[in-house]
Image (cartoon, rainbow over all chains, first blue to last red; front, side, top):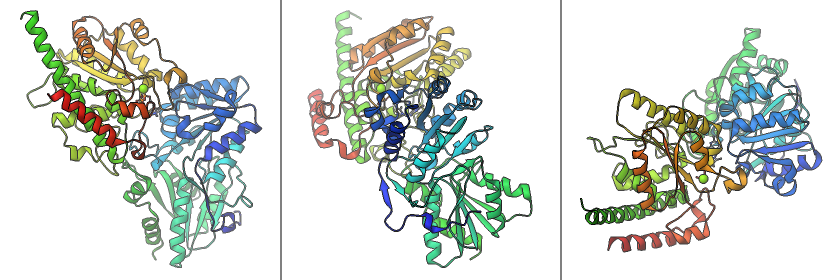
Length: 322
Length: 284
Ligand SMILES: Cc1ncc(C[n+]2csc(CCOP(=O)(O)OP(=O)(O)O)c2C)c(N)n1
Ligand SMILES: [Mg+2]
């Protein structure tokens, strides 16, 4: 396991990026002329404005037609380009899953799909909340699945994605997104796990948006002198089984936190890894339960699902028996 | 009935529906001004809502509707809410929780909510479900008619055309598609994003009887509904050309392309003043 700890995080002055994908996509398109940013009538809502303005040849709009988005993208890759298909996570996965699996999942060519407003990061309950996307895509053989935690990692992961073979699904961030990682020390590498807080006691494993929530809970645990550590796992597939197993077996209790159903997501993944070895620690999976989440603002939904910082810290403490 | 008397009663009915449409517009603003919402669509679709809920859909014995209405374009629920306030199915107090944390008055409804047959919000799924309902009703020998509202944006989804092919093949003459053809999607003009025209010709080639109308003319909406009932062996589609906020000039001028209106974005008071004046004039 890598021996990093909080030096991977930016110090107090954490900045907020109000339109992360706008800058990330623009930087990528100015550097890589083979990349085509694709959208399905949501470019405004995924913040793809500057590419449309400055590199119109590198933007392709297919209208509100997500099945077509993914299959046209697969065609674009077969003509020698690198498509980055963007829409909300619910449409990228649920609406166009077969196209994703068949057209992209069986191809050796790079096909990047970004699902925005995943999990409960969308206020419109049920139809807009994709709390099963990670599970769906990690079931596709050879797919790559990445859930970045902040604007910095989002950019680095996308830069890596356009050079990977086959289907790459990643979750996107939009709107005010914190830059939590220290750009000087942090470098995204596919499959690597990152220890953001060092300690013994209870082990917390988180991914994506939920790593932000975990950090908030860790702040509370720290104030209360509760020994813990935090492992951030941005790569859901191909997952680093060895690092996760080492981490889990170094703790007596492990809690996973994800912006995803506790069925089929990160918690399930960690449990699969540990149960393959046997006699491992107990895994407590926190996230969206297997019921319909409520709608509304993110703070409200987190509170209802007991995923806000205070309730998360409380649930972690309960697991640790403190 | 002599045609003079008939046209007299028609005039009265049209006046009533215009007044109802104006009240629906007012309700839409009242609801959306609380926390933002799909105000432009609600206002623009008020004439269709008035004709649908207060004239076309037949009532049953339980103060509800005998015919079935399927809302495909979830965010157009605001049109239904504006009408339900007049109908009495919802109170304005309940409707004002629209867009609030944890409300059950969803911006895009979930199946089972009073007045809504399907979970709509993942767009483009109403045309198929309404075709399935129409098929089932016909199979049972029921005389229920099935109406489905969807949008020009939804025409970009392949699912809609699979539905149209099925409905045409099955000659579902108890099915009426109502299209909000407002040349607008989430990022702007559908003509620019991905053109959906010519809409009537497309549906005709799928076996529909199609009519393009002014979606803000009560007279044309009623005539289309009548025509739909006279067609025996085909589904019917009315392509309703509209624009956001038709009926409230000041908001149409300032927010002509606002797919969604945030609370701070609109001069709600100016809009309310204008529509109250319209209501007043129509009430004379
Ligand atoms: C399947 C699906 N894809 C994308 C979206 C996101 N979205 C919400 S509204 C919209 C535009 C739809 O066009 P239309 O219904 O004509 O919009 P309106 O004219 O009512 O503003 C889009 C792309 C969605 N809700 N469902
Ligand atoms: Mg439209």
